[in-house]
Image 1 (cartoon, rainbow, N blue to C red):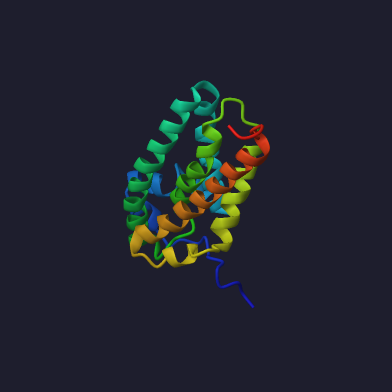
Image 2: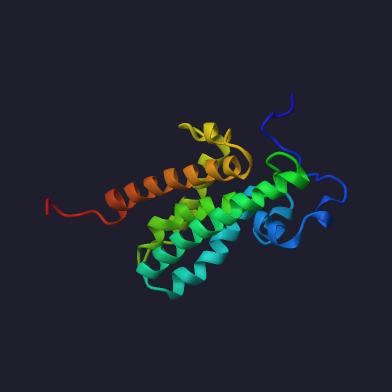
Length: 182
């Protein structure tokens, strides 16, 4: 039996040519959604690729601020672009992966605030985010019921928040443990 959650990557004939360039670029995370197999993972990887230079060259405070601001700005643009993508590609098209990009940035916020973060935290951030995004536990699936681009973006924002909370706990308990009571 076919997986009911598996969506086809086939788009309606000619729809990409009619879809205006700006919302198409935003909705597909600069085209990452068109890459073969697992467009959501490509959208999350695009977030990491765009974020890494900021993390490497900016201060932790700047990295957190820019990551948070980008999540908000691209999140709002993503709601619009995702709504537009539904007009051309149908309900919640799999190639529209800006929601994964924004959710991954949210998941990276605890990492962004650490000057010398262990690199494995970036991998853990991706794994946690993709887990919450794919399986949608703890009420995440309910957010998909919101209309248009809001539902497309909301589940990934919540998945990013859950991932960030777990990363904060990992950092508090294991990476930077405190000695005694302050």
